Length: 215
Image (cartoon, rainbow, N blue to C red; front, side, top):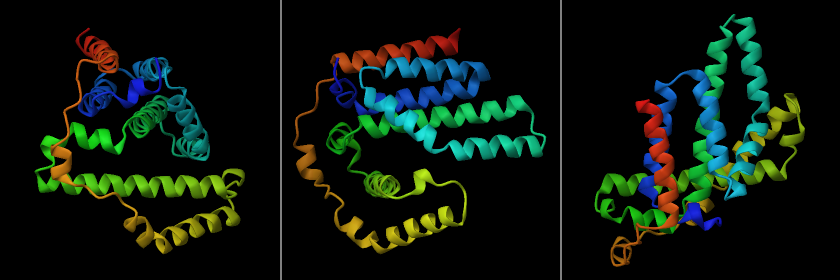
């Protein structure tokens, strides 16, 4: 198995997998969420980049975890409520990382070209692409700044303000670099094969989640 296993999976199947994951999380008990997170970690092993980015993101949010738990103690929030919320945030981060690492712009357009004729969907695609560029810009700024080494302080807040200011200054440049979407050219492309090992791998995961809901 290679990294292409996830990249070449059908986009709509990935979305079904993510939606089903959230449904399982909402309907099943709190401890089940922990099992799902572990199951997904195993599921994502063929592409170690997904799990690495996931753990790195969780570590970057360590201040949030500490602040939330500390606030829970002060506000006397029941422990199980805090854990339930944190696990749901963790699964949301995990699914977001999966989509971010496994969906390419070209494959996304190819797999959803039947929907591109709808103006609202096309506008949504433009927004997603724009948001993705903003996210990458912020991650790059974070990696190149001192934010990762600073604790909550005046200097930390100043770095955050610098990030916002830099983002606003470069907004026009970011917009100018957004890829153009040629609907006619995309519709002329050959449809990707659906019967692939990657899609089968994802369908097996979907079946496991469906069984979890039924049982």
